[in-house]
Image (cartoon, rainbow, N blue to C red; front, side):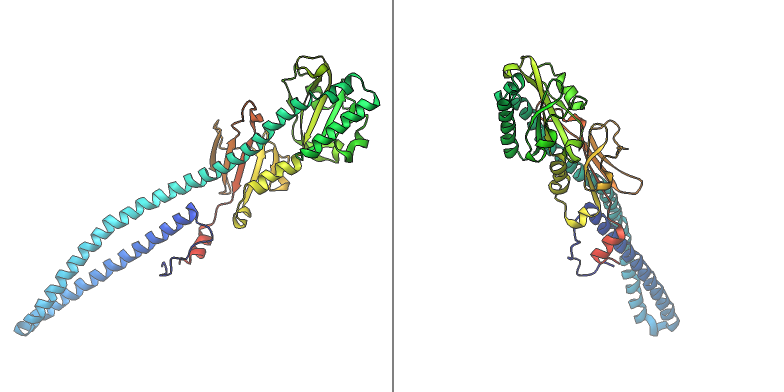
Length: 366
């Protein structure tokens, strides 16, 4: 039964808890209808027995017969009311149950899909700015002058300029300037400068791709991965060519790679920006996937850099489905931002659904 003190609120009002509550109300009403029908039947039997006894009593039982007939009439009225109750109220409760099931499925999915979309858009908007940064800084005169005339003074000044940028743009782990062979000419982070000086990056994917940029308008993005140059700190490199005179169509004289601090910035998106209550966060895994379905940020460290395939995508950019464990999986592909396509990344939220038993206990439903 539902207790009188039903104003008790569960720890979190959710579509699923509303469905469980509706189910409980429907169950109680069905029990009430069954009990009421049984009582009406018993009253009718008593009225019939009373009429039989009144007939046996003859004239002495006539007065009692009037009462018995009235009881029988009231029993009939009560029976008609019970039938109407069963037909109307219980029928509507049945429809309400179906609606609650549908709303639960839809609202759980929509709510988590919106969260997945918000998270992936937050990081993509952030990274759009990185595409502007790398192309802008590549035109700094200190950089192209150091590459055109790599004397100690110019190289030192280029390192100073990179250091200033790095100090004010805390989202970067490092900024690295190379010549056309891939040799590091200057870098920004004092912690790694001595280690990086003169290092050959000619085989680095980002260097090769940046060397192929045809103008200063172009840039490349490497994949999220640990940087061997920075103590295996997870980084995302944006890079472009540095050109003679800082001109967009100038001759290529080197490359600039900016190491976005993915380990801290990406993790902040899934852990802080999701902003889930503790009791919900405990049963929720938030992830960002790259264009190859690789987990590049997650609240579950065991999943990092594994592959997570979306089973219910079916060509849709966003949506949700229930997996084999009954957890809801919500996903959303980035919408991109301005001229940045977002690299096909996805936000994904996997949430273990609340058990009906736990909700009933929370609501004190028996």
